[in-house]
Length: 245
Image (cartoon, rainbow, N blue to C red; front, side, top):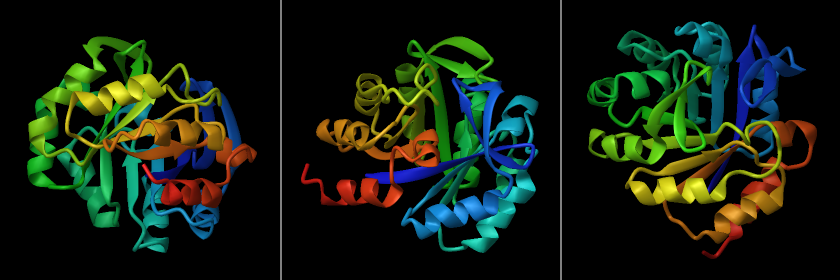
């Protein structure tokens, strides 16, 4: 299982939100490229970037920062989400050196777009399912749909999606542990690999994911915990690497 540091971008700075609320942001750095360097030097093998402004505006806003990080670390797999609603945007990011694009809102509102994107950019598309009480939220989590996350995962199974990033909104940024039960349910619902996100606080939370022994859970995104020092990236990755599941 991979430990994947998150860099959330708002107005060019690296921030963390609580439960996705833009007016509840903590700024951790005004130099996201330097922050990326910190996690790379700490031993991470993939980075998770989110254009928060883009998620609300429906188009990339912090694209220059994303491109700068991709250019600095051309060998490092980078996944980017937030405001990705067109094939043109995907092409821009792929050309910039990003490994994966995360489709969230558009995947819920126009599921056929996911199949189209997978055909155009095979192996590059991740679906982001952000859920509240099991129902998928969209538009920067401002709207909650009537679609169950597990049902949507099944729909994308035949499209060639590389992974699903699953976030429990009620847990995100709260450092109270991720929703292990819901993550396992999603991993069991389809053959698409699942990356857990939201609420990871310490090594104990990583251990709980490992203890499920679910081969479908392939990664864990961590944000506030690594910024506030309750989780060490290298230590967490070592725990995953040494786990005999």
